[in-house]
Structures are given as C-alpha cells and as structure tokens.
Amino acid sequence: MWAYTLRRLIFFLPVLLIVSLLTFFATRLVPGEPALTFLGQQARIEEIEAWNRHHGLDRPLAVQYFDWLGGVLRGDPGESLAGGQNIGSELRARLPVTLMILLFSFGFTMVIGITFGVLAAVFQDSWLDHSVRLFAVFGQSIPPFYKLTLLMILPAIWWEYAPPFGYVPFWNDPLRALQQIIPPTLMLAIGGSATLMRITRTSLLDVLRADYVRTARSKGLKERSVVLRHAVRNALIPVLTIAGTLIAALMGGSLILENITSLPGLGQYTFNGVIQRDYNVIMTMVMYAAIVVMSAHLAVDLLYAVLDPRIRYR
Amino acid sequence: MATIASGELVGLPLRVRRRGPVGKVWRFVRRRPTGALGIVLMALFVTIAVISPMIVPFDANRSVGRPLQSPGTVDPRTGKTFWLGTDAVGQDVLSRVLQGSQISLAVGASVILINVTLGTLLGMVAGYFQGPVDYVIQRSGEVWSAFPELIALLLIVSLLGTPHTTGGNLLSIAFDLRNLIFAFTIGAVFGGSRVVRGVTLALKQNDYVLAARAIGATDTRIILRHLLPNLMPFVIIAATAGLGAVILGEATLSFLGLGVAPGTPSWGQDLSGRNRLFFREAMWVALAPGTAISLTVLGVNLFGDALRDILDPRLRGARGRG
Image (cartoon, rainbow over all chains, first blue to last red; front, side, top):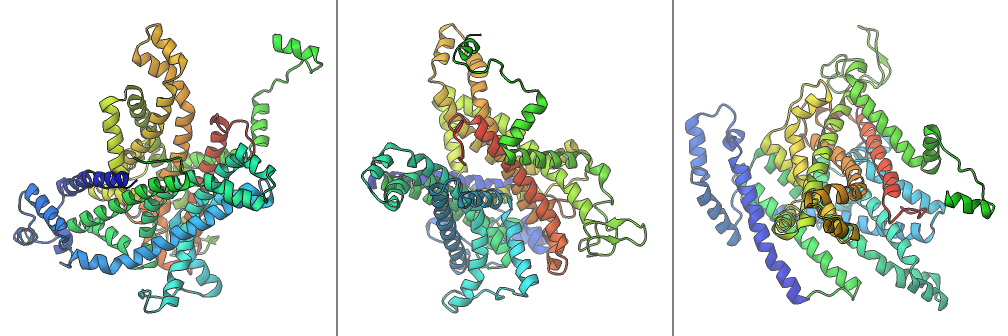
C-alpha cells in the first residue's frame, strides 16, 4: 500500500507540470495587456513597457516559466501583479478561512447525506423515504448561489437578522466565527448531500438484498446491527467515489460562498486573480487547486481498501 | 402466435390491450408522475425560450419604468402592468425572466449536442481500439480532472472574453455565446467520453461483435451498426444529466459576472450586480429569476430520472429505486 501511495504521489509531478504549462501559456498567449488592468486604460506605451519590465514580463516566455518554476520549487510563488504583495503570505492569511468553509461544508454534506440516505433505504417507501427523495430532487435543482442569496435575504426580511459583519479569525471569537460559517456552509451542503442521499439509498438497497445480509438476519442479529455493522460498510463504496468528486465541487462552492458572504478566503483571491489576469496568482491558485483535487482522488482510492479488504493496491 | 395460444390454454385473456398514442402518454403519466412533470416543465422552458421575443411585454434590455416597482404595478405612461415588478434599473422583471430562458437553452442545448457527439466518438474510438489513442484520451482526462470545474470555466471564459449577445433567435445567440459554449465543452467531452469508453469496453466482449467480425464486417461498421445503438441509452442518460449541470453552470458563471456580458437578460446575471443591493427591499427581483432557473433544472432532473429508470437495464423492473 505504501509503495502504491508513493507511486501515485510521484505521478502527481508530471500532471502538475502539464497543468502548470497549460495554465502558464494559456494565460500569456491570449491577447490582452494585464498592465492595462492595473495602470488604467489610458496608460501610455512607455508606462506599460516600464511596468512589464518591472514585473519581468518583457522576457521570453520560456525564461519567465522557468523563473516561476524555480521560485515555486524554492517555496516562493512570487508576487501578485496587483499590489506587489507576496502570494505566500496572502495564502497563509486566507487558507484558514477556506479550510473552515471546506471542512464544515464537507462534514455537513457527508453527515446529512449518509444519515438520510441510510434512513431512506431502511424505511423504504415510508413517508421518510418519500420526503428524503423529494428533498434530494429539489436540493439538486436549486443553484448554490440562489440558496445562499436566499439565506442572505430571507432571515433579514423575516427576523431582521443579519450575520455578524466583517471577518474575524476563528480563535479570536469562535462563537462569532461559527455564526458566520455554519449557516452558509449548511446551505452549500444541500446540493452535495442530496446527491449523496440518493447514492447511499440506492447502494444500500442493493446491499440489503444480498445473501450475506439474509444470513446475518437469520442468525438472529438485531436489525440495527445488520444494517449498521454489515450492510452500510459495503454500501459506502460508491458513496466514497462521489465524496472524492465532492471536494472539487466544494472548492467551486467555496468561491461562490466567499463571493456572496464576503469572507476573505482563497476563493475570492482566485476569482480576483482570474478577473484581473494576475498571472502569478492564477498560477499559484490553479496549482493549489490541482494538488487538493488530486489528493482527494488519492485519498478516495486508499479508503476503498480500508472499507473493503478485498481491494489491495500493489 | 404461440404465446397468445398458450395464454389461451391456461385461461389468460386472449386479447392484448392495444394502446393508442393517448393511452401510451396516459400510462407514462400514471406510472411516472414526476417524470411527466419533468417533461411539462422542460416543454414549458423550451417553448418560452423559442417564443419569448414575441411574448415579452416590454423591451428586456431597456429601463421601461421607475426602479424597484413592486409586482402588479401599472405603468402610468403606457397603462401596461409590470406583473413581476421592475428591477434596480427599472427593467421589467417578467420580460427579463422570459428572455433569460433563451441564454440557458442556447448554451445548454449547444453544449450537450457538441459534447454528446464528440464524447461518444472519442469514447468509442478509445474503448474499441484501445492502444495509444485510448492512452492519450485517458491521460488528458486525468490532467483535466485535476482542475476544479468552476475555476477552469472562470479561467477559460475570462481569457477568451465574456461574450456579448444582442438577442434574436436561438441559433444566433448560440453563435454569439461561442466562447462560453467552448469553455463548457472542453471539460464535458472528457467526462462524457469516459462513460462511453467504459461501456464500449464491456460491449466489445459480446458475441454479436465477434459474429460481426467473423462475417467480415469492418471496424466502422461494427462501431456504427452494433455498438452505437447499444450505447444510446447511456448516452441519453449522460446527456440529460449533463444538461442540468450546464444550465446551472452558465447561471453560476453569469452570476459571478463572467458568463454573458453585463446587462444581458440572463437568470444568473439578474441575481447579481446592482440588483443584489436591493434584494431586502425588493425580494421579487431575486425570486423571479431564481425560481425560473430552479424550476428548469428541476424539470430536467425529473425527466432525466424517469428516463434513467426506463433506459438503464440494471434498474429496469426494479421499483422504488432511486
């Protein structure tokens, strides 16, 4: 298993290299002067040239790329074109915000999705099952940005409630931070948990018809332990697959959430970087996203083996 | 016929009830009411998108009244009613919601058409011939899957430029929005081709493929005549699932300001920008486009679910699954 993990980790390198090359050349070869975004549309040619020279954009593309690569390998992602801040320190300041959002929304999605998926399967065709399926269909159909918009306006209209304004780091005021994080991440979790509910339900219904479950029942085991100890574990394999793709979706969701609630996380940073065509910020954020997504896929593959000992990686 | 004759012997009714088209529709409605609701919602969406230029009460792109008029206000100048009120710059909300369906349909339908064609082609070639083509397609898919979708879409659209459309019929809108459509197809093609590749790998093992090869059928013939028809259910299922996702994706991009150019009537766009400052006082400005997009995606999802139940052989006959 360790050898397998190591091989997968080594495979990260060529993928990251290709991703970085694609992003680097795609952002720079498309016509348009990033200088104009930062200097204003009326900037004179000499100003633009000076600005480009200052940021090293007048050098050949290959030189720029290797310069960037060298910086990253030394642990320095460079400076933002916008204000000249160091991207590394910006990442350190913003990462906790996004990490909280991802952690909470992922946690909510998994807990809600699996719990209700299991309940719906166990009580198949009951009112609970029907409500879960109804919720799942609606939950998937309402776009996240609309749910979050409603979250911002409805409590304000009904109870004149607004979440505390202005971001505070978690450790400075945990209660206030939770007030800011929990409602939107719950909203964000609806879509993913709706998908998980359906997958869990279908998969558990399949497993509950398996022979070994009948055996477990005929041994006289309590229904509770038949479901929880024998069936659910096997039903979770397809759920895990979805959970892996969920991380990538939630990174997008986090961007939307930060955009609506103005929490200063990495999503906002990525978004602004893309809008302003801030080369170094885009490169860093794409690499960061790729690493997170690939690690999630790897984690899923490794967890398969934990859930099902028959799966072995060599 | 043999079966009827044997039915007669065991005393089963001889006459098989034939259903006309109305009967068939009725049967579908009774058996899959949610699927039927999905079809109704989708039909409504497509119809509105097609005829919206003719039925909008006001010009959707111009401010036609005072800003933030509540629903049902009568315009004192023209005597016409703003059924869903006006938005932050005095545009008629109903007209914008009706016309916004055009963007969703133009983008959704074009992306799915391109994606299904290319994805099926690539997937079949990869699955049938395997070898180097397969390797390249698989590896490109892996590299692509390292990008979170939303970030990739944002990047592509921002690099190519936010598209502008002046309206008109659906085809010209789709042409105007080609940057956006291109952004969606890149990712969707890889996803779609992976499904098709998997199914092709399995189908290829069937005896009828061997039989066809034995009588000298060419690869092209085997792919088109034997594999493609058996693939269609999976392709159709993937297409409907994809349609909902693309409609949501376009709305999300427009919401973030990178879908269609500012000012264009689009459901995502109308939930953002200047309107956002006034949602607390003028809720209808948010509710109208939000409900429109939710109902559309709901329709596509319900329809897709019913279709999957019918077409997916693994689920066929199993009732109450989900």
